[in-house]
Length: 468
Image (cartoon, rainbow, N blue to C red; front, side, top):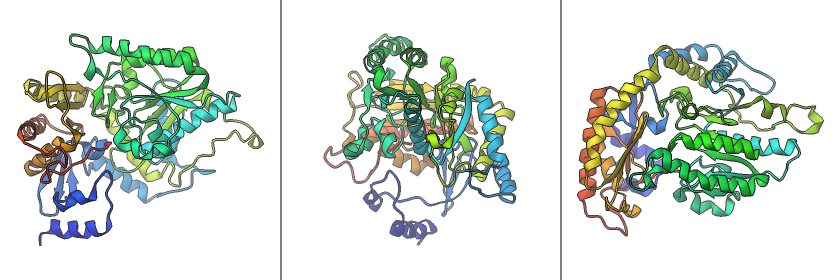
């Protein structure tokens, strides 16, 4: 028995994996990873895999990054954790100061959570509670875009719209308002991203005009709808939305958990629209992919609505045991150092350009409807019919054929349905990007040529769609 098989068997007896139909592993081997270095993951048998999805969109500066490693090692000898209620510590203070400094002006206060979904819950609760505190209790509904994803806790699911994750739990979800997404994949022939995004904003304008009296906030994934298939839209939508939220006295929540920290081409996606949301949710790349940490930044106006004598019960009584963990804050500080010292955003521009060129040829593929890109995220949408953009039946799990082929070639590509995407660490090289493009091209050729049973999918290529 190989070492991989040894660890796989032990794992499958006790571990229930996320976003996985566990029965799939009867035919799709689980891959236990022993170590990581840079863009590479290495299993127990010594095979390496290029991490093209940044280990669920979190790892931006490579595995076992020596600078982040050292910062955590230094911190663990000083303080591993302390309650953040009534106490504080140096890393959380320094991190908060730096987050306020690098985010849009006016986001002056930082509230910490443990992960992305929890951060969304904080923003939703804080917005609702704000309106309650200032005497507008009717403002308690949330507006979200179709095809959006904001996490898998109950309130976060409520403001999402990817049926695979929400349909089962409909009976538990909040009553929210869904507005058609500005997703530019569906723009008419000859219409620009900007024009389509402007046109689609009419739906949001109408919704706010009719329901602003009962709306607490609008929540969006700026520029890229990740788990919805890496669908993208123009920054003008965010600018129009900010203006409308101001007119109708509604909060704007930006979920930059997946797209923050350089993924879209700027440090934060909201910068491309020149706006500031009322709540900015950050996680994933915040710690360089090392430790769970999330930050919800908001304005002094919101903060002041909770600042009162205790008997008024206006305080925001929300907490997590590991809120503002010093080790996670140390990793985040090291990550911000790298952004600052290495001119990452500028360097990413060249990498993004190379990524676009490496994948450009796929736009001519008979079963690729679109190759789209925003910054360091590129997506290739496989379809049954290119002319009509008719999707493959989801039951065929075509993307997983790409996934399995990529594993055989030494790459970790985890498609979203029939959407193959690259969301690599920023330390990837042009040569490694070329390798991923080659592997993806081969995989797409295999997936679009194969005959698959719609009813069951091909048991040789089990798969999944996941939220990243």
